[in-house]
View 1: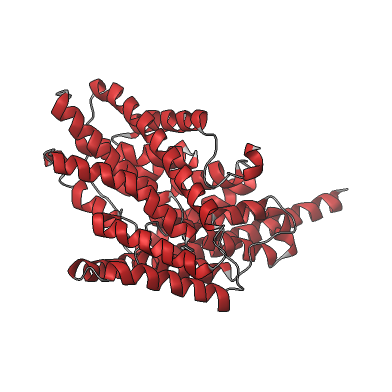
View 2: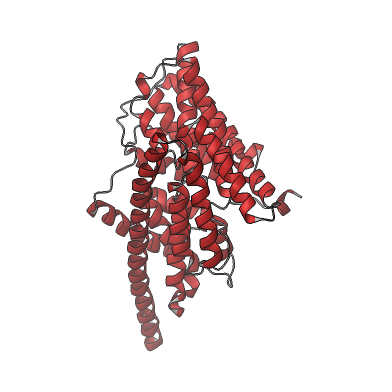
Amino acid sequence: MSTNTEIKKNYQFIKFKKLVIVSVIIGFLSAFLGIVLKNATEYYESIFFHRAETNAVFFIIFPFFGLSIIYFLRQYLFKKKENKGIKEIFESVSSKTKNLPSYKIPSHFINGLLTVVSGGSTGIEVSTVVATATIGAVAQRKHNMFRQYKTELICAGIAAGITVLFSSPIAGILFSLEVISKKLTRTFILTTGIAVIIASALSFLLHEKPLFAVNITTWHLKAIPYFILLGVLSAIYSIYLTRCVLFFKSYFSKINEPYYKIIVGSVLLSISFFIFPQLYGEGYHAIKTVIFNSNDTTLTLSLALTFFGITILKPIATSATLAAGGDGGVFAPSLFIGAFLGLLLALLLNRYTNADVIPLNFMIIGMAAVLSASIHAPFTALFLVCGLTNNYTLFFPILIVCLISKYTAKMIYPFTVYNYSPSLVK
């Protein structure tokens, strides 16, 4: 008995040691991929966007050029298979036979980069999530001992990727738990914990900075009713975004010729960019333009119409991008819509009700609220936005508004772009 017990203990120790080692490797590779993709996208997007600003004809050329390259890469390099985004991960973790093939790493990396750089009105977050999930899936297949930990190792890769994108290890863990795993185990804690520690260390060594480091000093209790209003509006906008994406994908699926999809999508994007150049790419450049001066912004009719138009057209531009073959998801669009929705609401309240609210606070809370409602993950949205801004002053109001927006959205329309299936509504 003692010999059997000792053998069992030794086996458990060896398994633990190997899980630690593989988690370190997954964390490093996923973080490295995320950092490279983030910086490459930001660098080249700014170059392409500046070129289009100086010569508007590129607002027509770039989307068509980018979507065409993505199509040819899929046809001749990536096995003629479209990227399904996070649904690919769901299919993998829920099945013992379906796996994320290794070509998904370069496929999502290259296509995500091309999509955003050429103006696709989405972000690299979903591309990063699927690519890093594939790193975990490939590692899981390398050793028989890891076969039973498929979900945990996939989540470790995802958590590391989210950590470096948003400077928030907690958001990485929570996204893996709330959206992918939905089950907390000791192995999950071990693998994702190690992966995000490695990712955080790599971010620190490479001096990665939060995307929107802002100085938030206070918030007022009198603003709570207005925060609740923002939560409800965010839920409505998230449903609008979700329904737009689903509608466009359904409509474009009826177009048999792939190049017609590219042409229609490119035309819609070009028109959007001509009306509002802020819709080009991820849109983070547009958020940065207004976020640091938001408290000094004066509302005018033209500004109000601009912000309203941006929040209405962004879901359409995002949907056209994805339906035409672009790679991405609703992370960046949700943050973008939330920022401008929050700012517009704050300016309207100050102008017409003398509410004296802080516009910057509404931008930050709006970002979290729309994201929470779009992916049904309030705690992920909370820590993700706090990490993005490197500020936790608004922790409590963000938490309340994220919960309100999620459950309001779920009550009105129970699906997200990730869990929707036509069979569920029959």
